[in-house]
Length: 197
Image 1 (spheres, rainbow, N blue to C red):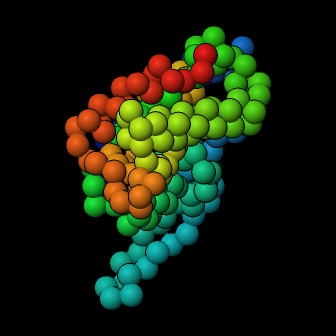
Image 2 (image 1 turned 45 degrees about the vertical axis):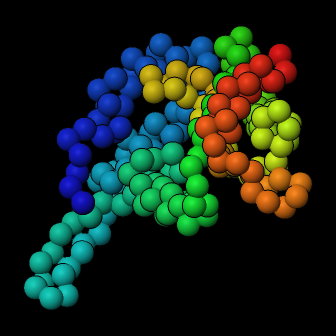
């Protein structure tokens, strides 16, 4: 696999100090630890080893990885394995992507109470999806789904939200599959009105 022209470590090297200075009000030592790990990953700082081709004898030096779970270099293969495993679980149907975002006013509270707030976000989104799906006016069926927490947006700003991948149908009380019509897909528009405020 070819090295991309720009990696997260390059961005940290270029703008890390400015980012830390600007974010010192909320950034924790855990955040700093992650940034440092990504910065050091696969550099001489972590040491290295020689790789030798058993066929031609070519020798190359490889630097050690940081192993941090947030490092895009280290977790690239793990991410691909996770995605492949999720693909094997998919049903042969269309899916709906639903996003539940923590209100902006509560985001600072989440920084200090991650476990509690993120747990509430997962439970509220799950209960909302199940309640709307069970309603005979929408789908009238039991559904399954999986949810993934994202705590940052693409600008690396604190923005807790949950992505939910939901099959566009479900199992009705009669143990038959619910309709996969556009009516099912449009029923998810009512979710926003169902979330408790």
